Image 1: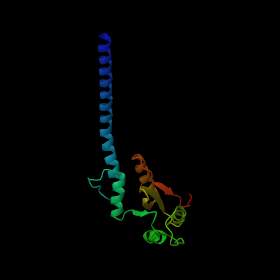
Image 2: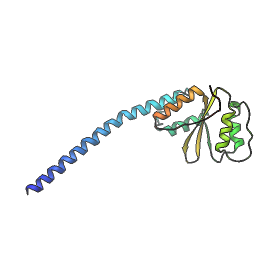
Image 3: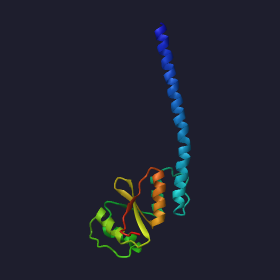
Length: 163
């Protein structure tokens, strides 16, 4: 009987420790939610936009910014011609484009033909959907840093310009 009571006491102590650990983790997540919210607001402010209160995720914010035409949203099935039409004002020379879909080689040629002060970044939203960032080089580095703090990766495309 004594062994049985010792087992029950040991299990009770283990469950109490697990409960305290879970409670501690829950309290750690609450400030992280506020930090994430502030980072999303800061990211939206980089585009002179106020983040709507219903947006809680980075992907949702990118979708929202694309709907405001601040980012260009495209997919792997987007033709090169469609892509060029969207970014044409920001290119110094227009790369050759056939009727094929956008691929890495084409994106590289677009990055090489950007106006000198611009840089190109790409973020994968989901599946084969992407958003394109065409911003000043310093500004895009700030966006990359904010995205990194949100554990998101914006891929920078090399424009071939070296300082």
